[in-house]
Length: 591
Image (cartoon, rainbow, N blue to C red):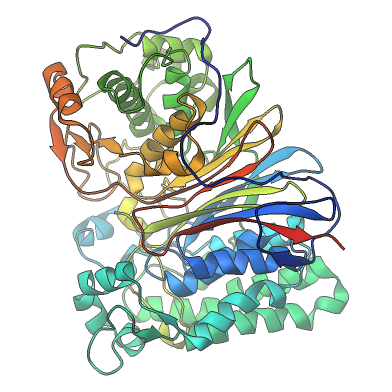
């Protein structure tokens, strides 16, 4: 039986079959050339990149080999080309965490734009079940990436964008996952000429193995690099600002707004002109005092606090005598997640619009009171109240995402989750695929995530980063709207508590609870425990005996992970449920 303990009695270990790591040297010298290998010496540094597509992983490794420290930007732009239904550095939104090895600080990038100024809850509710431009918010990802490049990058924009441009022009083969999404969205593609020109130029959808080109997207990337180059002599920051302005105060914004007006959207030029992404302070909890493990997440308006709420409850349970897939482990993680999602529902929205009581929610005494609500032989069902006292705090006003992670030779680390929405809404001849993020806003007056013009959606993207003794330990993410903090919690526990390596943690079967209102319209509550079919039948029977309504089948998002083990070696875990996911540990030569 799993019981809370005052101090956990287990060690953080590294066992299981996974990808072997190589020593991670944190020298300050710039890396200049990449070479495959499993060993490093005094003249090279180990680096790691893991993403949902091998071509994007290639892009990150290429930039690292050239001495870049913002390889995540190259990965994000390349994923825009090869996974245009999952993410877009041009049309989507991004939350990301960055560990700066020089300052030993973690920061968070808020690359999420607001709702258009012409949107209203009444208008949106009437069309909430329909797809189209009325679901799009200001795409904030590009501004976030440019802030990151300016603060943490070394290379110029053209060098960072060149892998994405090259793949877009040379073309790439349709993967099984892409064929699946093209088929699922065939009707939408057919009715959108700009999308049909890319994905069915001869009137038939591309199939697995066919070659797709993103020529217009390449042109847009190159126009941004040219804007940067035109101002490079003024200074690097000025050049980055020129690339930002070209997007948000120039021809790209104009093209998106024109498209919005033509297709009954809510975006205006002022929405773009007034928007700026931010580098903000992350939120965090101390997970393990003895090993100095701290877990960082992105602050609201991200839903990242959900994972921290669950881990704050779980951190005092002794899991040392059970296996990761035991019924006790599944039960206690599920119940902790239910409480976390209840708090998300009751309290989390755009902090510029509502008061989100972050400190109170992450307080250890509050976590203890939440832990007391969990019974090992009973299940909680929605509706669930928040554990915060109303008298103290008052009333608080699908899987279209990708996640990737990078560790460079200097010891800098990036954990990224970026999202778009699989609707294949292409903006004219820009090649930009635009988001449909407004489908994740509520319309009720008293909901903290209520649609409000000029304010932000509670964004589901929420990669996490854990440090140990102040150094990067785990970088992780899991896609899938409400699945994200659930899969991430499971994978973190698999490493930190059960001692699995990165690949083994990714490979373990996943589960998710639906005992809360879904983020997406129509906000259904399932009150079920959905489990991948690899779980043993006796575990499922045990959980059902406790009262869980178990549903079997399917898979829950895609996940990637980098772990720095106790010897300083890098491990990567790439999504085994995906045909294109790829993670590599290699070395780059020092100058």
